[in-house]
Amino acid sequence: MRALRIGVLGAGLIGKKHINVLLAGEGKYELAGVADPDVSAAAQAAPDARQFLSIDSLITEAKPDGVIIATPNQTHLEMGLACINAGLPILVEKPVADSLEDAHRLVDTAEAAGVPVLVGHHRRHNPIMQAAAEAVHSGSLGRVVTAASLWMTHKPKGYHDPIWRRRPGGGPILINAIHEIDSLRMLLGDIVEVQAFSSNAERGFEVEDTTAAVFRFSSGALGTLALSDTASAPWTWEWTSGENPDFPNEDTDSLFIAGTLGSLAVPSLILRTHPEGYQSWLTPLTEKQLTYRPQDPYIPQMKNFCDVINGDGEPVVSGREGLKTLAATLAIAEAAATGRAVRLD
Ligand SMILES: NC(=O)c1ccc[n+]([C@@H]2O[C@H](COP(=O)([O-])OP(=O)(O)OC[C@H]3O[C@@H](n4cnc5c(N)ncnc54)[C@H](O)[C@@H]3O)[C@@H](O)[C@H]2O)c1
Image (cartoon, protein in one colour):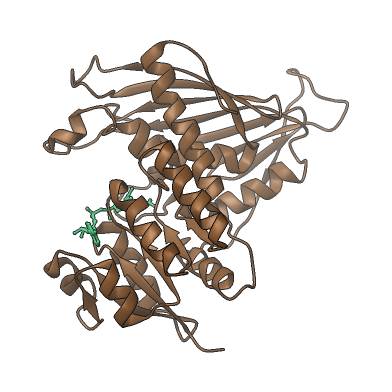
């Protein structure tokens, strides 16, 4: 089978990551071209690739088999519709769109046209998360009753210089929590209700710096997320998983799942269980270290995209899944702003 030719739209931080995966495709997939209105971004990210200034020229001249959309959030709908109208499958970076309305329009249009949409929630392809999901879904923890997710870190000086990062929408709920929500949804299923409080007391910007959220899952399980970008702490996926070498790596956990028979710490993947019938706070738990084979999650994500284009598989994260993660994330902001619980239908 010939290598699939994938176009990349947007040659910024994450576009470069996809470009590098495609350049190392070893005949399974290859870079068809890069489009970015910033000529220097494309030239720097992929000097030897065909470069275009717009989505239209990428589609008509490079004739890709699929397109990765790695442009700013507010462009995802327009870029996505251009590809869908051309019948081209897309892998769109998270969030699927920057509002629920746009996300619905993108996903509904794609489904009506029969064009696949995948969303770049890459952690679902991380072998650590896949081993955690296997343990939870196989019943090793018994019936899952609760989960606690931590995302506590300190964004550096200068991070808030662009004004949009000091305003609602530019803070840790929409930029960072969306990943935590997607991980919780991967392990525990759909979120049906959200309550939350936010604070801007530390920085005093319009945008939140700290948020505490509570979730009810369709299974009946309850979960929490403690989120702060003004906390000098190591408890984030970025610091604990070793997924991104740009961050320090700490040997600790940032996500805890507990069920009637056992509990799982992530990313260490330490499973602690009580034998059935012997659950008691007086009985020590037995520890087992789950294993996995480390892999850069962007590689299996690309493979999944190619399998879907070839008709050989289903999206690991479909447009509709990305939409549900976005809805739960936006519900945190709404609950915190209104002081009322938000139900998700
Ligand atoms: N999966 C992840 O962990 C992850 C991490 C970072 C960013 N993202 C997402 O990736 C997307 C891009 O983020 P980023 O940090 O790479 O941004 P960035 O600002 O570094 O890069 C965006 C690029 O898109 C280009 N661009 C803007 N409009 C364009 C258009 N109409 N056509 C083509 N190119 C255009 C810009 O010139 C820029 O080079 C966002 O949706 C973001 O949320 C995902």
